[in-house]
Length: 326
Ligand code: SF4
Image 1 (spheres, protein in one colour):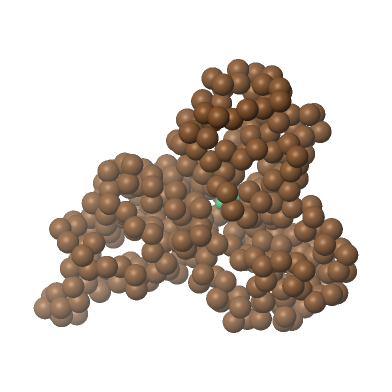
Image 2 (cartoon, rainbow, N blue to C red):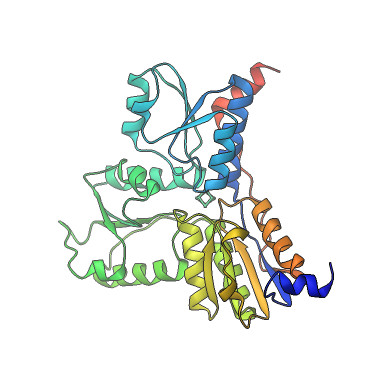
């Protein structure tokens, strides 16, 4: 393409810097594969409770292959196959599914299951459990369902002001997996001041993928004027990436895909950074890079901060079926 043709396409940064790691985490990869395998093994329709992962593009592609997304297990016809999403479900969802004789595939991320196990353990030991998370998020609903009588939701440090518990010496905390690492550290520090004997999980509940993508975007933000985060608006970890990029000096926007880039965002931008949330497929990043290349950006490179090699096995129900079919 000639430079005059490129100029007519609009403003372009000189340099494009890609965060690494970015995009799909092991839990999302496993959940998406679980639905794909279910479609291959059993044929459509395969019902999926909630969005399997919080990404419009992924949900649309699976719907085109025959997945039917429903809000509740009670919408699934009796006896049919349903996949539970990566965000996890409350025990009542399993009970409802059993009552309707649904065949279930549980694609809950193992790192969300870890938090469920902690909630049950602390509840059995009689603790009041402070769950740090976002109200209405599916993961929070699922975790709360493990011990509804014991769990109190805290969203911000300000929520701690008026927080009263039965026994201040019998308090535990757990967290959603996709929070801001820095903000959560601050809330936990405030909790420790308020409840000096508070106990928590042995290892952090904020997962490796959330943590690593935030480390990467901090570095990216320090080198870019603008950071574009690919992810859907209901994706918690993607929204946190935008916040972290802004806190570290860059202008930042959340976009579903390259079609949402606004011309005015590129005004005066020399280096644009790109990252993607844990539920955003790499092809959307590639399309965005192609968008900038078409406009003349030639310097495209990756800024790697952490190496990742986490993989999870497919849900047991899928592995069993695959083994049975040889
Ligand atoms: S973001 Fe973390 S907790 Fe959520 S699916 Fe991915 S690895 Fe699991």
